[in-house]
Amino acid sequence: MTKVSMTVNGRAVSAEAEGRTLLVNYLREGLGLTGTHVGCDTSQCGACVVHVDGQAVKSCTVFAQDVAGADVRTIEGMANADGSLSTLQQAFQDHHGLQCGYCTPGMVMSSAALLAENPKPTEAEVRYHLEGNICRCTGYHNIVKAVLAASGQDVTKIAAE
Amino acid sequence: MHNFDFVKPSTIADAAQALSHEGAQALSGGQTLIPTMKQRLAAPATLVSLTAIPEMQGVCLGDGGLHIGAATPHAVVAREAKAHYPALAALAGGIGDPAVRNRGTIGGSLANNDPAACYPSAVLASGATVVTNTRKIAADDYFQGLFSTALHDGEIITSIVFPIPEKAAYVKFDQPASRFALTGVFVAKYAGGVRVAVTGASQDGVFRWKDAEAALSADFSPAAIKGLAMESGTMIHDLHGTQAYRANLVKVLTGRAVAAALA
Ligand SMILES: Cc1cc2nc3c(=O)[nH]c(=O)nc-3n(C[C@H](O)[C@H](O)[C@H](O)COP(=O)(O)OP(=O)(O)OC[C@H]3O[C@@H](n4cnc5c(N)ncnc54)[C@H](O)[C@@H]3O)c2cc1C
Ligand code: FES
Ligand code: FES
Image (cartoon, rainbow over all chains, first blue to last red; front, side):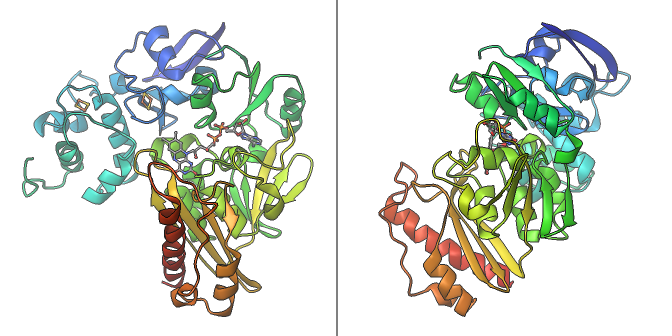
């Protein structure tokens, strides 16, 4: 075991990790931040996406020791300072972008990374960017709608499906 | 997953030293190796991370063409190679999904040499040079069949040098579940001739389609390959496609790649 330190959601943190400790286990078990989910554990589903130095990564496919010292953001760090939902999170609620919610932390983190890089994406760009995030419930339409709405675009013409 | 010691050197020399020990293995983006370790198909005693070595990062023009550090993630290649070698940048931008592209690296992809991976086709079609800590390996000598390469144990790919073609394109027919190439074709036209490399199709891994190269070197147009037929005997056969299906796909995608290169 080694003590691994990093910044998570703006806070300096440290916890014990073995070589094989994945970032997702470091977050969930080491720090108690259980908002980041493990859907597949085989690098396919994107439920575990967090930001490492501003980049979306699958936290089930990164070793905690490999990102020691990094600036990490998880779903717990996405709400506004007063605890209210961020624009993107609120859009997921308003447009029914979730059902069971299992994929949602990863969807929000991937979508936030897209909007940071491309503030007004087209529908096709949103779908392409979310290729690595799998949802068993929604059929994706309302997720795409939520992301477009969060980017300030008019989604009234996109039918609810 | 079995446990291991983790080291993160900051120079190629230190990484080579660490990799000379029994049971040590390189870790780059981990997008292939970590899933493999979870399945216990690999169980290194020590992992040597290559991601903190500045000499192995980045994209720049230099002697012989475009130099790409082996530990450069796909997303960076997609961004930074665009102005110099757009077909290569587009290939990098089509690998997996954004999170895979933010971690996975060109060196890891080439060391792994998955028969359905994208980069091997670009390296072979470009006649690129794989540079390691001890030597330079020509693309034609580097790929040696499924998951096998000319690399020795502990040898580190440090960069890849791509001669820049006059025209080029990569067309990938996605396998939608894995997001790898069901089949992909990279066509590159140089002053000295055309090279065509095919991934995802052959049981022997990435290969050059020499008949198409000859036809396209004489006439760089989709019509030039109309009369050719790809041998199906060595093609991969699995639940996603038969040998004949893949052989046909190689021809269709080569035509599309030529059309895209001309567009
Ligand atoms: C969901 C998903 C989708 C994907 N889709 C695609 C796709 O469409 N196309 C595609 O081509 N790939 C795809 N990949 C694979 C991806 O591109 C990997 O990033 C790549 O194959 C391996 O690169 P890495 O840096 O992650 O290597 P690692 O996983 O770190 O290492 C892979 C192997 O290479 C060795 N190695 C790494 N770097 C070096 C080096 N510099 N010198 C010597 N040996 C080295 C390691 O020891 C290991 O054996 C996908 C992966 C996932 C998880
Ligand atoms: S849990 Fe990480 S990709 Fe599915
Ligand atoms: S809301 Fe259930 S998996 Fe997406």
